[in-house]
Length: 392
Image 1 (spheres, helix red, strand yellow):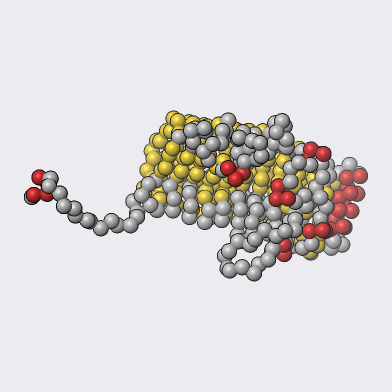
Image 2 (tube, rainbow, N blue to C red):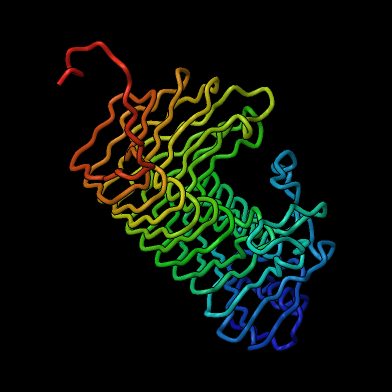
């Protein structure tokens, strides 16, 4: 059954969702117009359809948003905020579709009195995420534009069978933490034919452990035909205290931004208390990439002292690169990178080295044609010497 919303409020949208859910499910359709809104809670068997001309506009007051509460999430509060605009937990068969817009009013949460291009400082008050789904199954996000998130745009945690297609995520480059999609401990996720432009990471694969004894696995994530632009990273894999990220692929990706293209780093600043490292990343394929980066095209590494369970079996195929810094592989004595393969790599790097590698076992290069031949010219300085060579 269809439920059309004409009253331009988030409360009216929530009322239609509740009525549809009480009837066993249905399609909630917004009429064209702007719907100022706090939190909207979606439920099982609901399609929220936002057609062209319809906008859900997040309110600029953090107190207008509910806290996202779940017994299993009490210890996990990224960015010190439980606030959320579109939320859903323990549900199935949920869709957000259309050619309309969800706008997070992100700029309203920051002091913008900074020099042009300078990142805004983190505000003291909590900033809501745009979309947060926890332990949900069979999800579809299609066609909608997600604009100016004040915090993470998507946090999908422990969800299964998720399809994301033909969406746009556009965020101000000066906003911190406005990640595109954080895919956390999810299974069977596809992201296709979508555009991302963010101040922070565009796509993130995580496996956040809710407690030190709670397993978390992120696997079978497939990303294809996407365009990425970020001041930070296009693709980020894991943090040092995460659990397992495995069996994922990224294909046909264009990255053009001031940040790095692909980033998998385990820095000490992200290490949890009482943890020496736990992340395990394996069997990730990156294929057919065009990367233009002001930083690194690919950076894989781990700070000394951190003991990860592994970063291994990463394959990079058919890359065209233009970057200011080299491909960087920086393992450590405690965490050696293993079975890293590059094939059919071409392009140019500003500087004197196309590749930097330390603590890497079984590095494989095939058809590796990356040029680095720039740098300051060194003037010739003659020295006094009694060598016979100098007598000619």
